[in-house]
Figure 1 (spheres, rainbow, N blue to C red):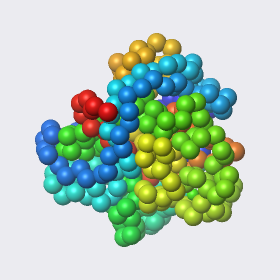
Figure 2 (cartoon, rainbow, N blue to C red):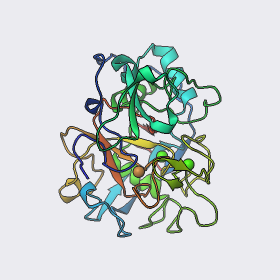
Figure 3 (cartoon, rainbow, N blue to C red):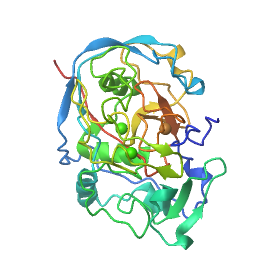
Length: 326
Ligand SMILES: [Ca+2]
Ligand SMILES: [Ca+2]
Ligand SMILES: [Cu+2]
């Protein structure tokens, strides 16, 4: 397993942008700061408090730095109850004309069973993760490639957005990405030390509780939870704070730089992560997480990718800027 620039090394960890053949070059775009965009996602209020951050179930992936467990104190904050949808992202693009990095580079990473593109558009598979294809023409509007569209997917999470794209959306909306600590605290939903947002019950106990993978990864998905790729953001049940699908469905970008040693030295009040790095934190796992293979659809699980990388199984949710009283 590698934790370099090739994602988390697990089944659903996507290779970074540089692992694919680059067929163009992107340039960062200016988005008017706090442009007053119509961010209309329902808010979940997370109360001020102290929680235990890190793995308490013994399921940690050692290279990811899910330990040491440590107490973290946060003020109250408001976070999106769902991840940002295709319809939400479309409003941002309509307002600003923003082009995502998948569009400027000309390709994005698509899971092999989700490709909807002519063979010529498939740019290749990085060694080690042959189920990921670089697909020319894949972007947020074309999640499987040029032969796909967003018909019926307005309430699904936006995908193929890089960390830089997510930050551009936040700038338009007058919002920001959650810190990794905020994300984990909100995902826990008020249950201290549990493996999942709903508690410690396994994900398949009494019906599926999250959109992950069932069957034999990466070839056969038995679709027991109903979804091969993304599900509508309000699928399954929200956690105790009202967050839908913090684990499963799509990975969610966080503000922090990734460092597997981050927990050994960060401050314990409102930690914002390392001061520098090469990859940004991703949290929560995705529809590609498999119960016996990757196991990153847990509250404390961590992944990462470079800020210009995009893929069909990662999106984001946002938090309000500034303090909230609760
Ligand atoms: Ca599924
Ligand atoms: Ca998620
Ligand atoms: Cu996974």
